[in-house]
Image (cartoon, rainbow over all chains, first blue to last red; front, side, top):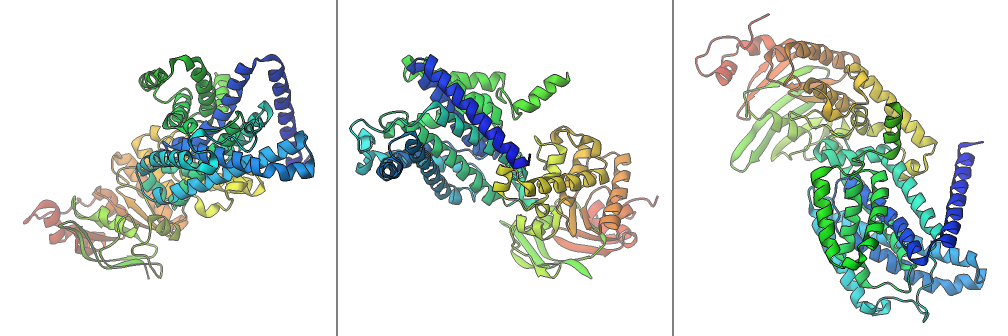
Length: 328
Length: 262
């Protein structure tokens, strides 16, 4: 079998497993737990995406909820508008819904990426922490824009054209299929020359430049890809519920994402996956505490800084850790 | 033939003239020393050449091209590599990765190649690994290639910086105090390695160094600066006993030689 044939087989096998797991989850879990499982998958996409810029490249974005919002609104709006056309061609079945949904997710990712490019291109030319300041502002500006965009429902939120709200396209299968694709793509990128160059920028930008690394271009690339992942996650998030509101994408959401990657270990993809799942679960467990959860988060972060500043994984990855354990 | 020439180059920081009307010519294929007392402007000269600082006046010609004011990455890609006085390795990355980072000329595969792991990506990775293994071998670091660069002893870190710089396939290599922190045995080894770089790889080497036994032992020509100005230029034998050089290093009226001939 050729390399590509083997890869296709692995991909189909993986999708089959995800499909089976999704089937089992929907059959056995109550709806409340299912929702947490979906959120965990979405968080994995968010965390792995954010980790590329914050962890691997070392340029801190603290407004990623803004890109998630752009993706969510773009995907929801596009999905609603394209649906009649797709239905007229493919009918009403699962196939048509799958096509609409995946197109919508791609559109969400592309719009978020464009927003990332717009924000990143000017601010990443500079060395230092300018990105943090700019992204913080961006996150707020985007939220306020959506708050006032009447064609997107303004502060009430966007519910599509149907009285029942946005279609509930988001299933276990699609969430985890996309999560797997994002993890594989970002891992492959991280463990390549591009990824090494991004790491070099994080470690010492002056030295990276002296080694002919096109630092600005690579930083913008990482940031744009990271925004794209947040956009896809936003699209998945949007189709989990009847509608999306600007309030869903507040500053706290950006902080949640940062918590995910710090808990797991900045710069580790395995860590980001773990952190994404962890935050989905703890957010639900702490739901009754309302805003006190921010206090708890702060305490959690402080304890991590004191006890294990590098996070659970440090910059290591699960496969290399397992190999080390086997060797011993 | 000169590989690099600076003409009346000037660099001012506020009221301080770090480099004043400096003329400097580096012959192709030479091992060239740039020395001077602390604060003479040696590192500033390196930073102006490599684009970290833009010169306030003057011309910098490298290999037939004016490069004054270019961005550091462009200068590096054009063929000038450097090491840093205060070691600047990518500390959390392995020795091998440090070297591979500088392999841009070997790397053609784009982001999509990396994501989809196609044949071009595999080819690039193989070429990068092979070249970095050769350079690590040359600098006696082969056994350490899997170690984190930040955990290496000082002398090895300095040699790793040289290996990394060589990965750029430079025509000109600027070494900023490569022997700093090395013991005499390591320094002697370094001298041999610098000669090998020139003889085997054909790289022109310029070194800023305070260890006079290294400078006098390996350099064919030496340029002495003080307060951003040239005070002497010539082969080691004449520079060593030049009264102006001795005055700059040891004070007026000193009569000695910078290193007793060994």
